[in-house]
Picture (cartoon, rainbow, N blue to C red):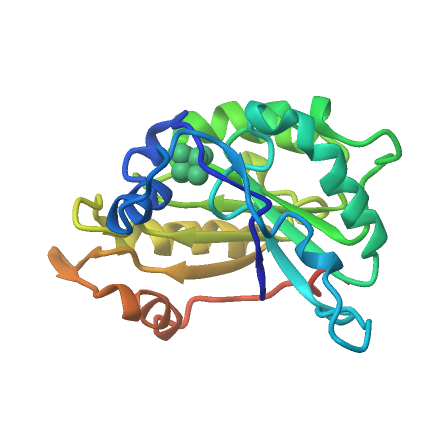
Length: 246
Ligand code: SF4
């Protein structure tokens, strides 16, 4: 899945941002511009790139992961976002996915022809703790979106999503831990509990990564970065209740 990062940089807005990987990676690579400064990148038009034969560089059916080093709905990018919607409209042969901690801004950021949502766009609402779940989920469920995903990452505590898990409106809940040296640990029991909630509600579930520190049966394990996704997959918790975005 290609990453399409039309802008880079973000400012922290909630508990899950504490050890944000954008800041961490910028620091590791000695970024000359502060991570909190939001700027357009050279990949702004990525989905429209052509090869030497003038064909799309990214063929029909490509799934783009959008804005993974910022937030699509951040205020600083308001003046650029309409161009992004235009690119997404031009590439209706592809699918696009982004997640956000600013779901309360979505309504004011949507294009005029959004209607009930674009068929080829999936939106993930991030809920890292109960307080953010209770603040963001009612807003998320009230918005016109064709494909809704819930991103529980970095999961900071046990979270009860039962009253929000409507299988007609939520396609998947995806859980992950926090990465990095100072990561907060993820308790495997929280993950199992979330899987059970999804199973009960007939909503697809994905444990996408363990984070750096996983607590299981009272012991804390350090999981190296390169194994965090594979270790989560090995737990065998993923369930799919319906088809992915068409
Ligand atoms: S919203 Fe996402 S990208 Fe922005 S600071 Fe928080 S974790 Fe980082």
